[in-house]
Image (cartoon, rainbow, N blue to C red; front, side):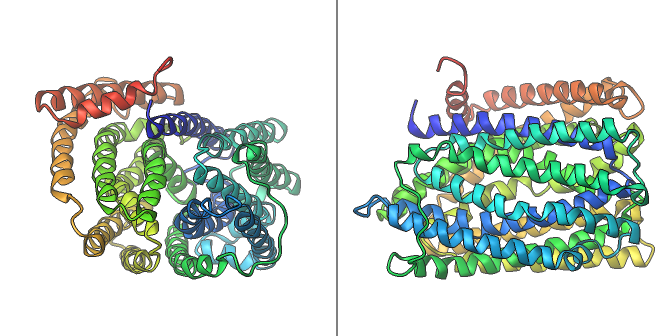
Length: 538
């Protein structure tokens, strides 16, 4: 097996287990605290969103964009990068501790920023939970620092597998909450300090262990990690310059996300709101995480190495191969999730009647999944060339579109044109539109930077995938109807919804592959070889 194939297999396996246990975590949480119309569930979603948002700033804004390429370059130093990485980790820890303390000091303000339109009782519960959840910032950051350093040293497995520990701890904690305080009220006013402590400690405890697990694998890097406050002279200034643009980019994305959450909070206690959008995003991210991260992450490391060595033709070849490979799998995944949107959403609701509202949010997000997939490669190619300024500008463009679409949804709601039950779906649709237009701009800018991207080749491939995916999706929808549709067996229970989702997905994949085989798509052979690498004994 090639190094890329082996790395992809390790990441995919870990991501799959992580995502499956993550799905179980969310199923248990919904079973305990509810989803659609549950003020308690929305309060936890608002509180837990705060450290997750900061993690996105740290991970996407700094580590992925800056640290991986810099660590790859630092390995050429005489000490193999020891001094650079020790100083980097020391500085990172100091920043994380300071950020965590600051966030806890302004916790009430942060909650109001995210959920200002929610009922007072929901906001009060969210503030109480936020004090428990915000320490996650420190441990999310340490997890990201350790994980990205391991990735840069081509040790891909631990970063992907460690979230499984978090999910298991969370499942146990949620079950304890449900058993000790049964029945757990969905009314935010009925929550006691003991209930808040159990839920908050569970959420944060899992993140702590997730970070600690990575330390067990650090010796495999061959690096000596020790505190070092002498930050001058090893290139951290260049890291700071690069990170400045990505931090601004991440903060812009965070601001746009908070606006979306604030607007959607008007639906709390009434319909699909924070918990529903979180679960829809979880389903949306499942194929992205399993497919894009498992295949794209090793490609990013390889692109960084080729860019650092000045092998630009190989960078262009990597871009084309990675997009065609990712597109092959993602087109099928999008068709399968769209066809199974209602039963898949039923898994994360307490009743079948709530599933269509949640499915509408999921469909709205799915529209932007393929553009997001291609953007993964385009954006990281800029990072490989130490260009973080250009991604900042096309991300600002996306954020502006997100703000415009979210405010438009709010205006339509205020004018009684948009029902409050469709508010979350409207905001999700705006996200997808913004991501699509962002990709067009980003691709054009990358073409200007490095020349031809061989776009004709991968665009034709995506057209082939789409031609196969549409009838495959219709076949999946037909399977859903044969299983009884909304009032029938397919969405009658969580177990039935899981089985239905699997059957619908299988129907979509079979039809998709048969159609591509009839078209003699060249990517089918490549994808088949890649899948074989994931099979036991290979």
